[in-house]
Image 1: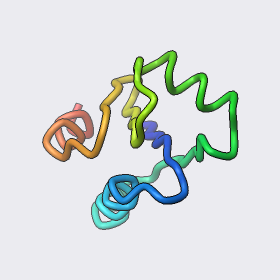
Image 2 (image 1 turned 90 degrees about the horizontal axis):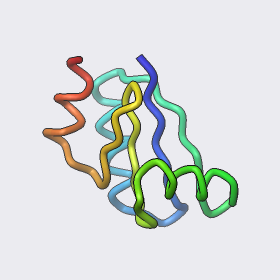
Image 3 (image 1 turned 30 degrees about the vertical axis):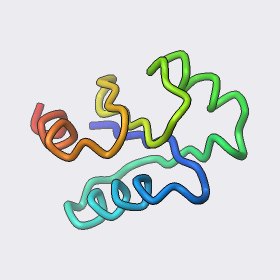
Length: 76
């Protein structure tokens, strides 16, 4: 399973998502789009969104901290 979360430095929903992953022992890769312009472009291309968090679980894109959608994607 691969989990990637696109974040910014001061995003409260990003913190909530990362806390959720930590509580549930989900390993993830964090990419700060404030610091990495190419990652920001990648995130927009994948999601069509400029807001964060954008979470990718095994190729499935979830925009925002949508806990039910994240839980569902993690079960697949």
